[in-house]
Image (cartoon, rainbow, N blue to C red):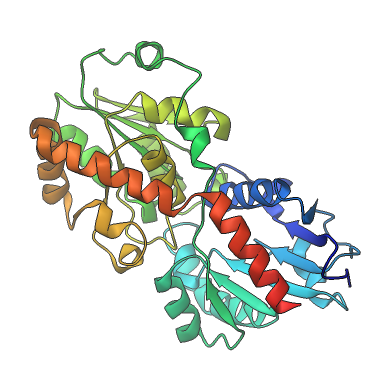
Length: 342
């Protein structure tokens, strides 16, 4: 083990690095790894899948077969960021309701191999305990380098022009995988109800044919309302441009462990709207607009568009969200947890 006065050696691993990307777990992994790499007292070793690495800490972000061997490495401490719970699979992957019972058993076993489990929200921590996880749990919210989202390389007007959106239009942006759990159908319903507002959804189906209801989801992508644009999967370094081309952000998901895209949008200066679910109660829920159903969402969009004071209030609250979840502070706290574990 490295001496406590020397650099900590951390092997940080996410199978998304070599497989499917375009989803929140990969973004969270990239943001965490990058923020740790900025610290002088940490040496970050990415990947090295299926092999053991000389290090102090193994930090896993995924629970698949390429990280499996690292659970059994001797003389290291294993930290796991719990990005998924069994309900995360339902409405995400095909036939998940039939194999969810296996996911319950597997996730409980996998997470209990950790010396420290990092829950990405208070609700996730509760669900892990309900799952039967006995490993020590700390709540470590996902975070981002907020500075990356405060400016954009592509002017607002150019991106709007590329998307065939009028320069003066009120634009609502959403982001995430196109899957039932994300409730893109609510996004489409609002676009139909508000034909004078423009809607942009960034994201696709990175899991392809194993994505839940993939044929129905593809039909939605292929047949959007005239005032809605599906942008597909956009590289992470281009997301800021999309946020800056919009006037507000909306994540209509009915289940989330965290919802990192909302933090990206907040850092870009957009008012945030989410579904009123317990997942957000202790994260960014108090600073965001919340609604329970399609009619409520439509009403809130209209109010944000028409009530300038209401809009300014939630734009200001978004800055509080961004400050709360900046990765620089999170990286320092994470190193403290590593050292405490050692």
